[in-house]
Amino acid sequence: MAEIVYMPKLSDTMTEGVVAAWNKKVGEDVKEGEILAEIETDKATMEFESFYDGILLHIGVETGNAAPVNSVLAVIGAKDEDITEILKNAGSGESAAEVPAPAEENKAEVTDAKPAPIPATTHSPVANTSNSPSSNEKIFASPLARKLANEKGIDLNTLQGSGDNGRIIKRDIDHYIPFTPSAPVAQFSSAPAGKESYRDETVSQMRKTIARRLADSKFTAPHFYLTLDIDMDNAIAARKSMNAMEGVKVSFNDMVVKSVAHSLKKNPNVNSAWMGDFIRRNDHVHIGVAVAVEDGLLVPVVKFADTKGLMQISAEVKDFAQKAKDKKLQPSDWEGNTFTISNLGMFGIESFTAIVNPPDSCILAIGGIKQIPVVKDGALVPGNVMKVTLSCDHRVVDGATGAAFLQDFKQFLENPVSMLL
Image (tube, rainbow, N blue to C red):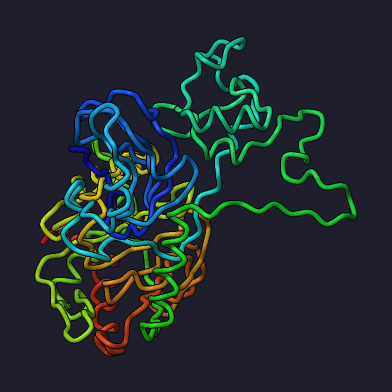
């Protein structure tokens, strides 16, 4: 009896997937556990394993095409088996049963921080020195990338892949810019001076989700914003002392996460979620930390952050950032946030407002530390000030509630020792 393979739900927010590559052709043997296809979701491109043994009898979604979750992806069965009736009767299947989706919807999502620029790795003709310059077959690249490169006349030896272990994938081909050492400006624009020019780029599943979720949040949740200046002199001194210890490397963002965790325990109404016809008050503290990736943003979650020390928080955040860069974050890494932090201070941004990350009721935007004149004890002295802005969903959090949270957050950062008590 032939088995229908449905488009799986590979992330909590996935509504459709794009087949980036098929690893099997119609008529080929398929073993349970073998990689059947590569599927681009709203989070990442993920390998999809077969759950059945048999022959690949039918491909329902061609390479490069998108299809909704639960639509027919493929059919696996016995050789020469007639699947006409099966395909005729195939409706929405139960793909969620094939690849279990995370337990709750709408948990870890994106913020409105700017995505990281696409690395300019496609410009160097020596980027793939480990590959033979005479044969693309020896280059680590997906089948779709090879096909597109061949169609566009792109030498894969000139590319550095952004996939796992340096694998060249579709995104690298889409963003390819020819290497032109004598005319570096051409890397940014190939249009002759005085002539209009543009390029249309296919929207990734991740960017589609960013657009949909942020629009829903911005135009559904009534936002208001609270901004506060924080004296960072003591935090700078404390961090310097901690990092002077062997094996210790704590960032200001780690201190922010720890301060937020303590402040949420003191202000549980901020650690809440609008659930439509009720408000969920979370007793646990799971803090999402926005991380920029090529196609947008992911929000890995530091779980039970209030119970963890600075060193443990630092290690987790570093690990999440590396996994995000390597496209190895798993659904369990981005599920369950009860509050989100978006930090653009490292980019020199003084202040900004962020869009609430559903189902959270608040998101904290962190600006950079700026040295400015301040008045202390009646004297004008140099000071280090960090500006933060709390975006609140007014359905859950009122102005006084948000202000109380910010005051506690300020107290913890301005007196770092209090975080250890």
